[in-house]
Image 1 (cartoon, rainbow, N blue to C red):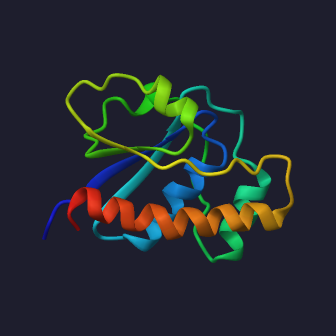
Image 2 (cartoon, one colour):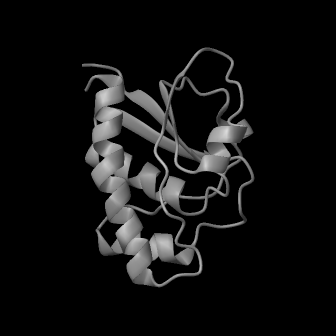
Length: 137
């Protein structure tokens, strides 16, 4: 059995896009990838719209919480995916070389649930194949 590849989905606030990315990767690439997420300036909680959009798709939300990127620096990360321009520009230096890709997604904060759902679907449509390609899965 192949060991799981760890993918860090990095955003600024770690309250929406990166959280949805984590949940989607852990669901859609279960058994291949372990998705984690973090933020460069994490917010106090995951956005209600992100939680609702994930639940509408039947995706797990248990355990999702904003984390500072420093909290995951000890992880054996195989790939970092920045999902906002700010996170790409402020991405920290990891203790060992790690592959990085940038996939920006719209930030739906303050918008309707339909916009959160649209962003969730965009993340699912683009993030999963990009991670597969980047990791050779």
